[in-house]
Length: 348
Image 1 (cartoon, rainbow, N blue to C red):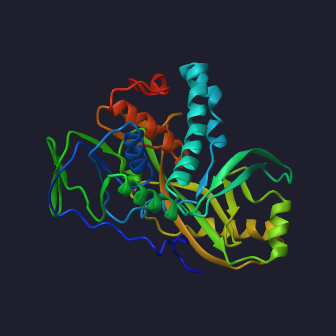
Image 2 (tube, one colour; image 1 turned 90 degrees about the vertical axis):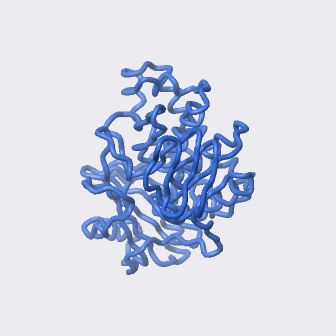
Image 3 (cartoon, rainbow, N blue to C red; image 1 turned 180 degrees about the vertical axis):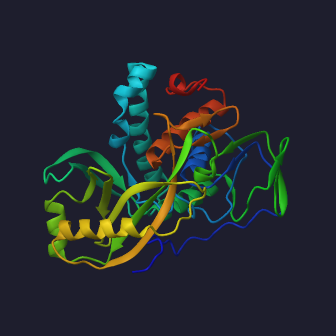
């Protein structure tokens, strides 16, 4: 078993780091799903001169280490709590924003011709040890690294400037200072994932294992059991997973809190043991785990992600679909435009 992320995109050519001086209107710090979708939504609104910088390669953070399961339904679970806090209308709008984010991903993949192993799955939800699951919704499966890097290539073709391996050292008034240059900007947005520090945010670690390719018989068994894409809510934690395009079973396990920031995390061995036990139950035989890795993500203590329009910061969305929905809101807020989520996030 290799202790490294499974996802690869060998055809991707990274952008050069920033050298010298650069001028832009909108500067986005962070090239994960949050940062690129802020750029995408600004671009859709006709904005020109957008620049994105990332301290590593696009997708090298938590986005590229995710399961590639773009699910909206599970994120609508606290709708009754949201309705109590913010009103039924606002809660329904948030649920709709998550579904709209799924639709935006589909449109982007088609329009940008992004080859990312895209597939539609019917998500099935299992509770405790019950063998009967409940179909929730049609969800999206992608290779996350191919998706986010393909999105970066599409944005570059539309005029967005991207600098990789370019870390932000400091910001002085309207000038961002990097190791080898500077960027003068009019507006700035921070989409730093687990690097965002705020009292309402907590960092967690989740672990994912991917098997070696399975036989046709094992694949049929998994599909018959509703495990093509699934979420299994157990008493103490939860598991989630899907069948990959190359006939492997991917399974992720729960989370554990951690104090440090950043997407990198040491492999959580107890999680791996739990995943292996689940795989044995699901397939009915010992199956070799090919790769295993742990990755961090940020989650808000409150019912909604953390958003600061005045500081241009988003964080704590927890899932990629929620992140995309919030990126849409922040892009509108930066431009001073109305958005369906205004009621939820204004003055929070």
